[in-house]
Figure: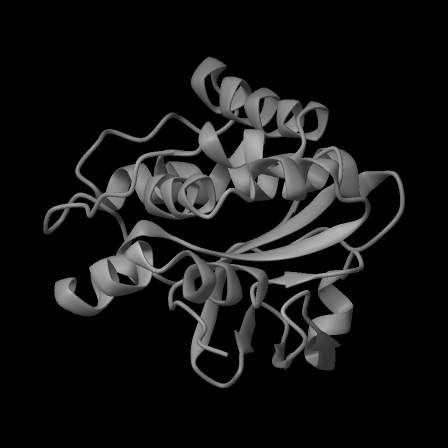
Length: 202
């Protein structure tokens, strides 16, 4: 994970419109389809021709998402092109093993556009200060798996020691009244991940 900033227009939009599956066994396959459709939308917004719904490319995306469940969270994130800056920051802070070895956590993962919105001087200062960087990153991690329905009106303790609040319903959720969940309920071997459009500050 090498810290970096995407250029203008390299990353896609902020808010997803796909709805997660309701419950039970359907959630596994439904969640893969939900995330797969969202990835297709992101590709389209970036100017890349999206795969046809239900076609071979769409099925490949679904299988790739299902494959995330085989990897621990830091490893899974390193394979996501929307999280390159976060991956670099986690590496710089020495948190790869910490996150991969943790059990049953939730990560609110800022996408690259979230880091790009931070003034470059400020971002570089955080990346250069390991203690500050560690505090910011662990503020995005909860010590439990959080299901989508818990986001409606939630307060959760972070590994940093502070708390975050969540609110919303249906297809729209926010964290700390500032970060929107753009893609969520992504399952990895040891974590539930929600991609967000803003970096949270303790």
